[in-house]
Amino acid sequence: MARLVEHQAKEVFRRFGIPIPLGRVVRTAEEAESAAAVVGLPVMVKAQIPAGKRGKAGGIRVASTARELSSVVKDLLGSHVRGLPVDAVLIEQALTVEGELYVGVTADPTRRSPSIIFCEAGGVDIEETARVAHDSIWTLEVDILRGIYPHDVLNLIRGSRSLDSRQKLAVASLVCRLYELYRRHDCRLAEINPLAITADGPIALDARVDIDGDALERQRELNIDIAEEAGSRSPTPLEEMAGAIDERDHRGTVHFVQIDPDLSYARDKGLVPFGFDCVGAGASLTTMDELVPLGFYPVNFCDTSGNPVASKLYRVTKLIFSQPGIQGYVFVSCVSSQQLDNTARGIIKALKEIYPKTGGQPNIPSVFCFRGAWDDDALRLLDEHGISKGRWVRALGRDATEREAAEAFAALHSRWQQETGGAV
Amino acid sequence: MRKERLTFQVQSGGTVSLDRSRCPECPTKACVDVCAEQGGPLVLDEARGIPALRPDAGRKGGVGCVECLGCELVCDTRGLQAVCIALPIDGFDHYLATLTDPVVYPRER
Image (cartoon, rainbow over all chains, first blue to last red):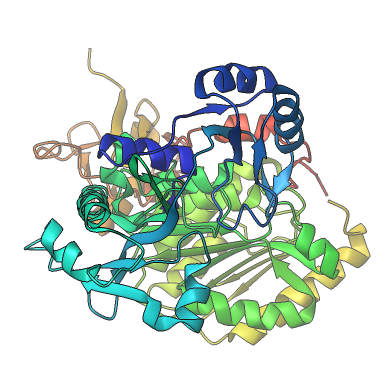
């Protein structure tokens, strides 16, 4: 999934005729001053990060004077809101609103269809509202072959007591445009929270657009960096590079996410950071379950599946080893039809380039556990190329369990630490 | 004069290059065997004793390389190091250059 930040989502809204407040994105206090001259004080100053609940976290503030604006912008730029760095803010006109609603279009997996969601209480945590006041949330299932029409939405919101008939018509028309946007851009969620009711009609005060990760290739016009879903934060450079591996080549897949990009979690918990690659996400989880209690922490998740070509393994292995501070590497495959000799070739070529002086033998503890199709060939290749003879290498075959792989890594790491001091 | 270097592009973005001036002396021609096992495009030009592309390679766009990397690796161990596969990663060199903490692999122990 790729989540657009507010100003990007609002730009998409604008193209679909959904009214938004006048605003400008700025990256300096000077730019903010110019923006305020266009927008007119007072203004809202909104941190542009891909996360919700910004208001409660201090990421949305009002500035009524030029001095206040300068102070707020300087305060926000360069800060972190909800753990995310703020490198841009949206300067937007502060509007007088008569009421706030929630409207959204989302994919409903239980109905296997898009669903329109409407709630008269806008500007609030919709998940919490759904929990405590479920009846206040009205939904409409959409048949994608038929689409929706304003009268469908009017029927949904006919019981609204906060909207008069003119406002209901305006909201119905707006929801149809939001649905059109949702379909056109392969969204998982298109949401307006709050949708302000003003004297000039409904206006989207906030905007959320989440694009289906599998559709990013055909949403090039949105200019999104393609990367694996990594929660609410923006993708790291390594994740972007990994995302590009599958871009032109659909022979197997590579899923790479940095769980602990700066190693801060591992350090805080006193765990040893290591680079990680698995064939199969299930094998990845079970191997993590064995390694974490032994004092290790995978700084990345990586799953190479669907029988990827060796060149994909080559590229992702280079990325995994380029994470600073790792004190080891673990590769474990599940038993599958993946051609492990190709997997091994990709890893071997990467190691030979990374460690040219040792012929590919890593300088950190490394466990290779090949189990599955062509696993014997994979182990033979590691041997032929001298990798498995490395001092800090342990190669395991189809009889090894995840626990044995984890214990082998722990033993290797312990010896490596004793003999080298473990400093990397 | 015949070209001694055989070069072709691969689907994921990269280049396979064979310095075929070395190949007549190669006792194994193992790259061809590995490529055949994978259903790839390399065959042996019997007359010259060097690897060549299958005659039908390239008819459907691309030469049909499955990117197993076997030709380069086997040429390393059983041949005369005549194969070089370049698989660039956009932005990787810049990433390495801008790291404040060095990656672990330059350390030599």
